[in-house]
Length: 336
Ligand SMILES: Nc1ncnc2c1ncn2[C@@H]1O[C@H](COP(=O)(O)OP(=O)(O)O)[C@@H](O)[C@H]1O
Ligand SMILES: [Mg+2]
Image (cartoon, rainbow, N blue to C red):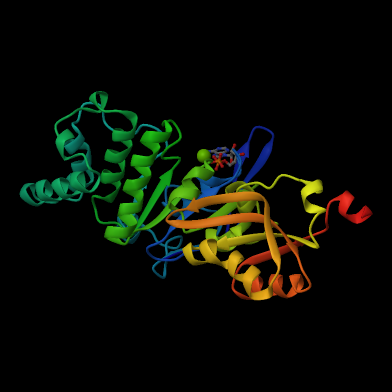
């Protein structure tokens, strides 16, 4: 579990102080993946570097499994750093070392004896699916393979927390998938808590349980991805759910119009038809669509309902756990 409390950090720039983090509070539960998103310059990397103890915050607390890391010094700080694996931004492998040699590096620094080290390197290469590349040099690997080796290296010392700063920024979509799979395996198979900084909402869509949106050094949105998508006003729902086009003419044919967000197989598959039959209303899909967040199917539909019990049907859909937002009908509907 990572807890960040009221973290502030300024840098002195040429034109005065630059506030990179302005009271950031964040909680990441053990064994979950949290995405940190936001525009360039919003403080994402500074946050990651502070949590990795590579940068000292001006104030605030960073607790990993209960221990406040900001107050530590000396050997306690070094020990705490070992609890945190870092995948640095950009290409960070040593060119003159093989893939296995790169993964072994933190184990060598920690004084792990040769035979144990080789076993551990073997396990890690297996975890990232690159056993057959053990003897290859970084220049012989693709960008995605290099990133997977960087993840294996970050996991070498068995950290409880893994930080990755833009791990997929220079990669094509296919290679991105292989790197995200490796981060997801670190969480699922090793129980590591993962904080991933990204400007790509696709990363959030594929592997994140939670997301924090930064803007000008502040957290402007934070929560479970599946909760935030149900909140029509959230940025997360805006960027992850299928958009709904306006269609006033189609809307005008119904008594009621609403946007409905459905989460999970059961809801996506059955909720709307069941509401229609229970309440004897005609229910039509006017827009929106279906997507997937991680393994979970999620839909946002604009629906139209006609029939005496349309309001009861919408209430029932909402009570069944779907987010329902009633819409004023298109201009032609108002005129009719
Ligand atoms: N070492 C530094 N010295 C001066 N300013 C910095 C330094 N690191 C970051 N900044 C400034 O802090 C702000 C946040 O930067 P950063 O955390 O890198 O944002 P992001 O990763 O979201 O793009 C920016 O205005 C950036 O210019
Ligand atoms: Mg950055």
